[in-house]
Length: 421
Ligand SMILES: C[S@@+](CC[C@H](N)C(=O)[O-])C[C@H]1O[C@@H](n2cnc3c(N)ncnc32)[C@H](O)[C@@H]1O
Image (cartoon, rainbow, N blue to C red; front, side):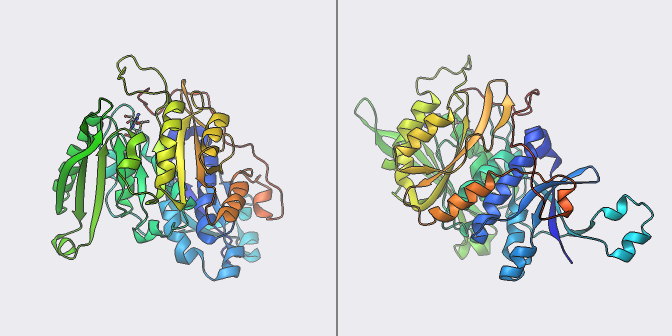
């Protein structure tokens, strides 16, 4: 009998997050799978023969609602940010166990490789080719996007391709590229015209190289400038199809790129149009070469942008914000979001991990106070914050208690180069 699904993490996840990789992956899976299933799911870290896995216990869920893992959970497992391979685990029967040559091995589960559905519409080069200081790590971006999507009452749109994603500080588009790979039609905004320009150039070159039929258009946003004149801000739109036939049939992905101050987005985008808002905010760490006048402290930016971001969110929408705890402490962020009609669901330090000496990163999850699924989301928040590991003995005994500490920052040299802003 299949006992659980074991997910092997991509080695790169361990390099990016080091010791926090396991807890982060568990919490992401609990949010994503639990949200789609409508109830907390049993996900833990489990070590087998010296290798770390993410264990998803399925028996209870399968009993309750048929073959869940074979149904819609498998595509979701495939989309988790660190998934590398999956195995069905089962205990060897007594005869096989007693005949085992290695007495130690006889206690180990049997792992059967199991295919996961292809989750991506485009290749990984879309996310990985662009390299620049300040790029948000792709795996972390995928985690952010998955978490924001899980919060949305329209979360099924991530599988259907119609979840509305906004990155309001998109830089050179790491979130947007992830969303495009998922088959979505995202919108991004950044105040830095150089970043937007670089992403535009990359995308058009990529589309040509991939022989993807595409059209583009651009224009002014006509925002009133601080000096009083109109005309500030610009937009660039891309329409992308898999082939000519799809293009003729109107089966296109659309990308909207806005060059403007994110605090002005309410003047450009329709209210209640966003399902998942994903932002890796400036970290507020001084960088000698970057002294542009538009830079605000991360907390000032958050405070000034939140009214617009809140208005853009659908009632059933959600946001996942990556922040530097050193310049944006949890209590202050909680206060700012709370005073703008948002309920913070993630605990203090739930996704905490070290990026470099100056950046102690965390993810804050929030939804509108009147989100229709607040009860479910609170239950998932509580389950996501539970310890993430099962001790070796407990792994074979579902009744045993969990033991490990939560995600923690590690003392190591930076693996991810971050532009300090
Ligand atoms: C941590 S970076 C995001 C990087 C991005 N995820 C990427 O991978 O390229 C933060 C971004 O916030 C942008 N930003 C800062 N202040 C802004 C503002 N007022 N309006 C819009 N974007 C802003 C910066 O230009 C920068 O690109």
